[in-house]
Length: 511
Image (cartoon, rainbow, N blue to C red; front, side, top):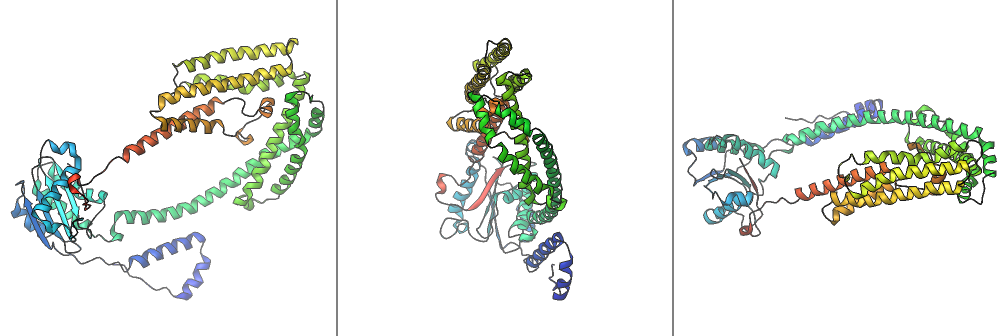
């Protein structure tokens, strides 16, 4: 028995300000739980109000059954009805649990109309019906509206009987079922194992939340320190190269389509550099305590992103000047422009090791053939630059066109993947949406992305193979989830066509 105790106001006022925030939360939770549970006293135990046994199957020993049922105590007066019958061995398998429900309802309407509510739509109040078909191995449990249980809890009653019924112990199984029902029907909420579990889980969750806050703050401090350190290195590099960056920008040919686009980035370079300077001064003044707070995240991340971006842009400006003017070191600058596309070509083989990617398809063969051909093109462009038969513009166009062709081949291959993975239009749309989302994902400097001349002039000029693979995985997962949801939502139970609008609480299962 739970008893509520009054806490003197002076005690509370003296102690609560001294405890931590977490302890205040726990005290509040415990106080609330005790305040609600204290007045909820268990109802008095009473025997069945009436016991009705309709053993048409002839499997119950009533001399044993009746005394045992009379000794079972419910929380409120309850009429217990036991109905057994031998079912149709052919009909039971095709109709599922509706078969037993319909049989029980038909019997009640014919032999015991008092089992049904006055409006004919529910089982009568105060009633518990237990139905057994030993021939078809079915068990049913049915309840008046003031005694009803949910489907999962009802299954516990049937499970208690099933452990006996599998051994053909029909009487013992029926006694066990009624005994279990007596414990579950009108059970006080605070005795529900789920409630007890949730209460404990809530307290554990509150403690876990407190620990999580500490961990999150510690990780935020570590992350902010790392971001600031990375940003400082990039900012220092940009600052040291500031004069060289300005000189490189002044010598980039502005009549080049690539040079013109890179110069557009340079026009705001100094403004962004000044903003990075302001942010750097701001984040350097933050204490460790402030770096643990969420409010520090925005300036730190902006400083890191801006510094890394500037560090990338000055490299692009330098490479653009070197490559377009073919000054010493242009070979290294060229290799840096081809490196991203070369990396994607290397990933094509791994692409076909994943499921549902159609390695044996014509679109896969086209991608692998393109890989070899593309490498030859890039080698030829480099040779043309070396011997003067190709201009830097034309060489960069070779990279751009190859990237566009790779994107087109991947788009064609995506249709092969979609055709093999999806069964209908809805699933095809799920896959296409996933592929498009990963294709358009914006790469950032903090992801390790470093743009080149092509990325600056033509953002997303190729479809990254890794993004394609991620899209396939995401789309396949979406399709599997949709199929699982569709199959789980297709189940139903009821009383069959003959039940009409009857919707009494009850369900059945096999043993």
